[in-house]
Image (cartoon, one colour):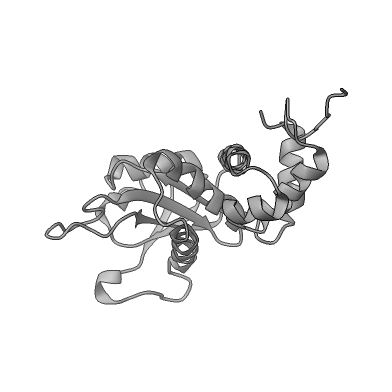
Length: 226
């Protein structure tokens, strides 16, 4: 029996038309159950292909250039409601995510262990080009950005200040809203898989004006899933 040749998936029993249909349904953001029902693929196969695609998305995100121009930096917290009696940033069992948004460009986000100056500024130094202007709130971990070579302006949310002309962090906050709304439909994600789902949100957001099906197929042709 002649072996199927699939440019998108190594050693696969899937035909290329089957995989292209899967990629189209995945790009349309259908659930695994919906993809299995429409495509006729086994649910385990759908889950495996989705995980592999998310790994490609995460690699794409990691390979993007440093952020430039005017950027906005902020932290957000994902997961269950905060434990009663605990207060402060990231209290309870929340997963802490740090995000940077380039105006007119892309967003980058990363899970961090805490919101300390060392943790947040390590991400900034790795992902933001020197001399970039960074907008933040007044959280103390952002102290010292000017000494690192960045421009820095702050908005004072503590005084109900959310925008002062071009000074705001509305772009990164819009991404948090998008990501939380999208991830809520999974009704709870394990810590083991949360990173890949988060990066899928980042990938989709950064490529929202592109044909995602074509982009996903190109990623898989250039580096077939295995």
